[in-house]
Length: 118
Image (cartoon, rainbow, N blue to C red; front, side, top):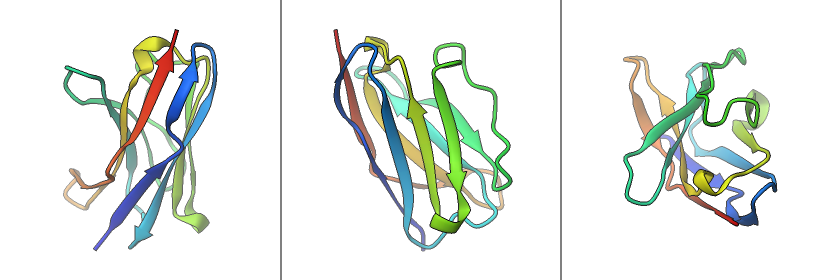
């Protein structure tokens, strides 16, 4: 069993930074990809970025490129999302998820709320 826990969300101002953490409270990340997703109010969940166990990342969408950075500490079973120059449109619940051997994201955290106030 794998249980993921996100933390680090909160209420910030436009232009501020936050660092989200995703920890494997039970189980581990192992050799599997871990991704960050977000769901804004009234919108569908969208993929943000993922990272392999070797630290290779997917491309960032234009909406966060140059502002968000994903990283991973395998020894701590933790994945981070550094979010800089936050915008109001970054307001969302942020989720992390871990892939399984079949390639799908099976294990999800409960989410952490990020609110960016202008």
